[in-house]
Each structure stands twice: as C-alpha cells, then as structure tokens.
Image (tube, rainbow, N blue to C red; front, side, top):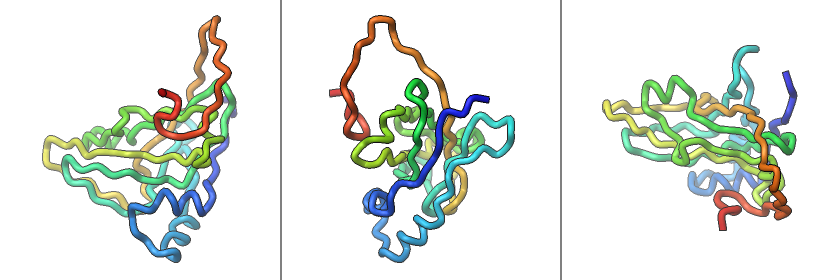
Length: 168
C-alpha cells in the first residue's frame, strides 16, 4: 500500500474562524477543538478515511449544513483527496455533498486557511427521513486518488485561497 499523505488538525484560530456560524463561546470551541479526531480507516480493507463531525446536528429533508472539520491533509503532489458522504448515510438518507464530490488538491494544504476541510451536506431525502449526527460521528469519507496531467501542461501558478480560488 502506498503511503501518500498525513491528516493534521488546523490551528485553533483557524478552527475558531470556521466555526463562526455556530455562535459558540471560547470554552466550547476549545473543547470541540480538543476532541477533533483525525480521519481513520475502519478496517484494513477500507478505502475511505472516516471524517467525523465536530458538532451535533439534525437535518430535516431539504436542509443543508456546512461542517468545519478542523482537519487538513498534506499529501504527495500527484495525488488528491476525494470526499464523499458515508455510503450508508447516502443510501438511507440521500445525504449528498453540495459540490457532489469534494476535491482536495495537494496544494490546498498551503492555502491561507491552512487547507481547512469543510464539508457542506444536504439531506435530500424524498422519504421524509430526518438525519441526526452527534459530535464525533463519522458522516463523510475521504479517499486518496492519484491523478495525471497532459503532456503539454505547463501550469506554474500557485494557489492562495480556498473554494473556487483557481477558477477565475
């Protein structure tokens, strides 16, 4: 098995910035930060690294939430990390990422936001099912994937931003 990356936590200041929408006090934020679990595989045959929620949340059908995970990933240059909902949650609740598949580029690690990974999800249930996730529950999974470039690719620009920063 090829070892291509390493998960880390972002700084407390970056986590605090990402959690602004939740209106938590400093003590609660510090507790949540201290409880961040780095993504891990459940079994030796698992492709996906489970990403755990940093907050309790309930999603009624049609509702959306953006979860700051408090994590970042350093990886080899010719790899990417793809983020998906956990299979069971997608199957049972039609839980979907708002960008369908999250693509974490290797250079995102060096962004101004420290490469902080956010997961924005929607409960797209058409059966009226409500989804409840507790802090620490796995709700998404991330898979390392190698990629290639074209023979005539000569891109030299460097990332300095997050979501959509390279599509100008």
